[in-house]
Length: 420
Image 1: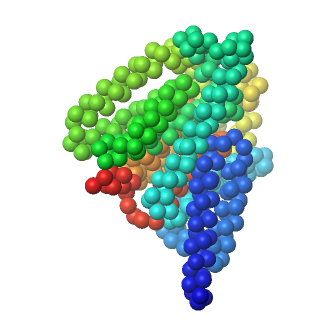
Image 2 (image 1 turned 30 degrees about the vertical axis):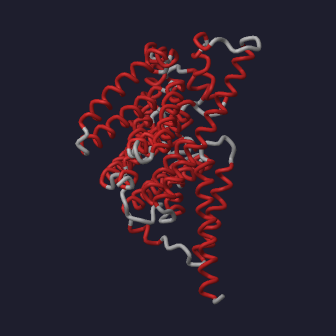
């Protein structure tokens, strides 16, 4: 065997290992133990080794407008450390936000379009297993509460299930609902683009997972994530149906969306209770007012990302919001959090990033990314999604996978094309 052929086989082997690690990283994202942290370090190490061996060519990424915006966003987060009296907390926040450009580099042109789809399915499969585990744990707990037996299905206290299930999975409910919503978006897209005649097994698999994730997200009863997911899925489905001239499908999308929404509202008691009573609205009014006060006091550079927590707690005391003081709540609005911690430029940069990704997804016909970013942006109105690892990692993962990972410059409408 000559040296050139041996080198080529070594490169192929390392590339295969790298792709396998990307699959495992996607699978690890929803898991509640830190496998993803270990895999990330392994990926970084292997990436550096392959770069040293000149097996990856990633420097052209600097010519990418999206990567430049991500880098500018990270630079702004870094500047916030200069005005933070608590640099350790600021560094923790910047390290978390660094996942946005880091994952884009690690994924850059590493996967074929089919491998991108496999990576998405690895993620949804993991979420599926986690949801089954959540149902099992809460089911066993509920059984013990019911003196060792499960109540008849119609008599189950679904309020109990909806409220405690995310806690038993160690997953904050709005974030859990967003993860499940992403799975719903993925399988709704492939269901839409799968031929019932020629791909019947795939069609029924996507249909089952679509219905399952929809029911599970409804059961989680996180209002913003659920409503945003259903709305934008319907919006994209209507757009694709009109564009394809399938006007019967347009009517079907409208009827299914309206009827399923009414069905969920009437039958998911915990969701109906939260909507009718306005649970959490009064608390958010105080949290948002506190953040707006901080923006008014520090409009240019903000309080600093390391000091925002303490600054909000001080405001909560002024408003006699004891729950916010005791739990040290964030503002539950990512735009206000960025404005308060990094100044108005921070809020503007976040909006610019979302708008750029939405336009990029629209122009490349990447409707999965478009819907995910749109739902994430809406969720940022009622939750500080980028303050936690769960929110930042999934957002960074989806952007890196769908925008940067494909080797081919092909739109993500490939499933539809593959039927012809």
